[in-house]
Length: 237
Image (cartoon, rainbow, N blue to C red; front, top):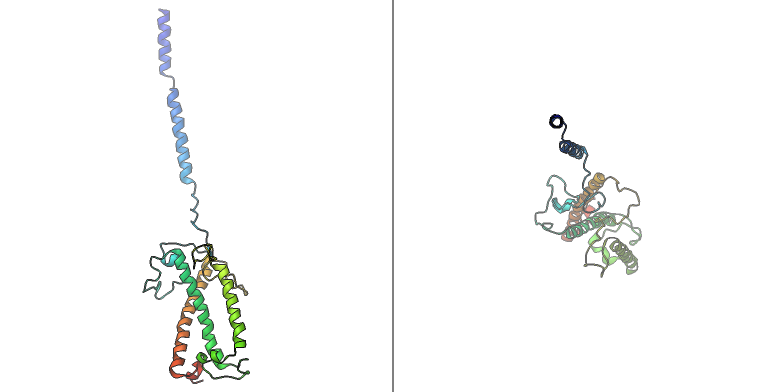
């Protein structure tokens, strides 16, 4: 009888004891909830770009010309003939290299038309010579032209060694992967901005001035061929 009463008391007491498995499960659930909360509040680091920025520019295939500067109002992105459509990044960079360099040459040519026709020069004995610019080159002695062309060849060879892949080291007419079109590191006056947005703005200004200069130099050349008069002479000076 006493044994039966003792057994019944033990069973009754165990009915009010906490379950070990339930406690373990609750603790596990709380730990998972805290981990999830920490993950939700922890800020995620921004994804690193696929390529290293060059002068602050990272190629973006969703933008015209992979996001290169040069788009300005009022027309915005202007490519009516579709030269840049469906082009690879390497090809777009090569187009931009050509545009920048031709623009720089045209800006110097525009000044050359005005200065060469209207100021004293060593070639013409320090007299103002009124031969139109289109006809001046055949009149210059070869001893003057040779060092001039030699200097041009030297500068072009230096530019090619900085920006272009050497023949045999890759496909022909290919720019280096880390080369920014037009930036050969020549900045004696320190005008190049260090800020990416300021650099893009300056690059757009240079491109627009170069585009205008290409049109101006072509117009000056055609105008002189038509009436045989210098630029300032044609304007009445």
